[in-house]
Length: 167
Image (cartoon, rainbow, N blue to C red; front, side, top):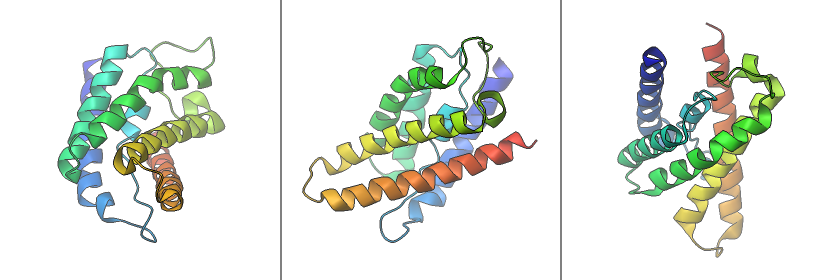
């Protein structure tokens, strides 16, 4: 239990450092900025308590706010994503799975894991867009940013999972 906690803590630190130092400075075509710290929610076991999901989401979001200089935006969006993540995970897990199962390509299967990651990223990006823009004045630009950032984030998270799974 403690080993998995410290492993996730190390992952959170690494993801936040890479997000702050590398990925926040990537803007494909002026729209798409990848957000990889959502991956920490993908590493939570099925039996994680509700308060732990929320605490992880808030802490990682607060860390992203620190690196991105966006006070409260990351914390709010990651807390909302963490609130919905257990239900989204249960949509993709079989009824007879182990309670301590950690989602991944091997445990959920390829398409189910891709669906889970996609829903998490889309939810997180949608909440960021709504909180950041807070108007539909430039709806087309917001849509480009939402779709571009989501697609890029999903691809990077799936690549991270593939590398992590090939130990």
